[in-house]
Structure formats: structure tokens, C-alpha cells
Amino acid sequence: QRRPAPTTATMNMERLNSAINSLNISENDPHYATEINKLKEVEEQLLDRLQELEERKRNSSAVYDGSEYVRDDDVVEINAGGKIIAARRGTLCQLKGTRLEALFSGRWDKKLQRDGSGRIFLDVNGDCFQAIVDFLNEMTISSEEHPSEPPTMIDVGYKQVLMQYLELFGLRIPPQMPDSNIITQYSQVKLLHKWLNEEDGSSSNICGGGTSDVELSLIYHSSKENLSNENFHSRCANQGNTLIIIETTEGHIVGGYTNENWSSPDDPMSIGCWCKANKSFLFAIGFDMSSPCKMDLINADCKHAIYNCSQYGAAFGGGCAQCDLKVTGSRVYLNTGHIYECGKSEKLMDGHCYNINEME
View 1 (cartoon, rainbow, N blue to C red):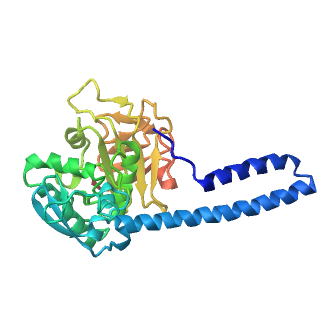
View 2 (view 1 turned 180 degrees about the horizontal axis):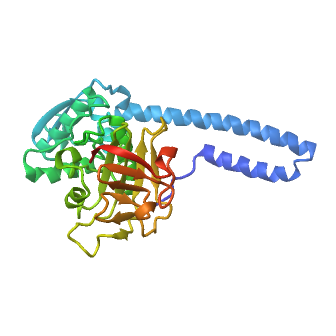
């Protein structure tokens, strides 16, 4: 590729910089100091002129492409694969930094393909694009605590197409409220998704706002399936990555995440053994009014991240008395600082025991 030709202002700046560097060698000479000051004044004048020219260039570009006259209240008509869809420009552009926002920002209006009636033409499945627009419309009237439902398709065959379009336009769906009796505040949902994304999340489709690729599906609910070590292992064994959430009778929330399987009580080869899980972590919300905290593995290569044992339910770190977190029957014991980082509250250390109100 050919390099663009330097502008006159750029060449003048280069000559000035070269002259200043040469004169700086003799900066102790009063004559040279005077000359340097003169050159710096000229340099400032040229910089001001360059800035003025850049501003005029941006303004001219806005007039040329029409973006100077666009408004959020503009109604944009789109021919999406033969399906006519109309939406406010502000609705289509609300997720800043996405390809969808760039497409309908007005900057490219004069270059976009049009149909015979002058509508913007997109060679996409109309029903899938309509699902995206419906989702964006719901976002404009939804609150943070009650986010809009993610776009979906009744026809299962088009669900993968919809996911591809979301990726194409750079869109990611905000975290959804999980099926949980413990996590009931949206701020808690966002925090958990943030922590999970730090370990196993993907950043390939990031859009404005920073959201999550993680999906949470309930596989064990102690109030419905009886709180016991055996039930935990039978329901959670071989389920892949799992997030354990525990609510104590005092209303505290504590738990852990592991990227390795819990073992089945029917597997004699794995029960009573430790397991390496390099992305595991513990977390706590609401202990001693302290801020929520995430406790990572002290050593990601540690082979004692989780402990599979029929005498316990979920057990993280160490094993036996040295577990950083372990569930036994209807109680949870906390002793962080061995395999996982210390918690922010003393109640997360020194073997404190709490009665479990709910576990998911």
C-alpha cells in the first residue's frame, strides 16, 4: 500500500522539530535560547492551524455523508430480505460501539445499498432482524433491574442464524435474571457474570456496556430436592462448569465456581480425591457490610482446587479440615486463605460455620 503524501503543515512541523533539536544542543547560549523561543511560538501557531484544518475537514465530511443532519428521532425504513421494518434511529444506535450503531449512525447513509423505494436494503433474514429490532425496542423501556428478554426465534432452525446476526452486528445480550431464589438483585447478577467472564467468558463480541456470554441453568435447588451431600453429588456430578450459590440463615451469600466436574457417588475412583481446576474461585456477598469479594486460587496450578468426597457436598480447597469452603449436610464452613485468597471479612476465615437457608 502507498503511504499518503505528507501535508505542507506536517512537513513544516518536521522541519521545526529538526531545527529545535539541533538548537537544543547549544541551549545555554542566550542567542540560541532566543531562537528556540521564536521557533516554539511558530510551532504553536502551526499546531493551532492544523487543529483548525482538522475541524474543518470533519465538518466537511459530516456535510458530505449527511450525518450532520441525522437525529435520534429519525424513522429509518429497512428492507430486511424483503421484510419492511421501520425503527427510530436512536433505537437502532443505542448500543454504542457496535457495528449496528455504526451502520445506522448516518455516517454511511449515502453509501448503503437501497431498494427501489429508497429504503436501506440488508440481505438478511427478515424475521431474525425483526427479532433484534424488537429486542432493541424493549431495551428502551426496560429498567436495569428488569432487563428485556433476549431475542429468540420460535422456529428452532433459525436460532443459530439469529446468533450469527448478533455476532455480525457486534451485539451481546445483557445478563438475564437466573432461576434463583438467592440471587434476586440485578446488581448481583452483573457481578457474578463479571466474575465468570473473567475466568471462562469470551470477549469476542463485546458491545457497549460490557455484558456476558455466560448462561446459568439451575440443576440443583436444595429447598426442592432436600439439602444433603448425596443429593448434591447425584444432581451436580458430571455437569461441567458449575456455580455453587449458598444463602445462610443470616442472609449472607457465599459460594464458589469450578471449571471441572464434580464426581458421582457411584464413581469409586474419584470420590475422596482432590482435583485441579485452574479457573475456580470463591466469592462472598454481604459479610460484615463489606463489599462483595472474589477469592481466586493462590496458585492456579494447585491440585487441590476442589475436593470430591461423599462425606461433604461442595468442597473447595485443601481437603478435610483445611477446606476453604465445604458443605456438610445443612452447614457451610469457611476457612479461606489456604488454597484460595483470604476473604475481606474475618467471618470468611478461621473455620466459621453457618446454617444454610438455601443452596443452588
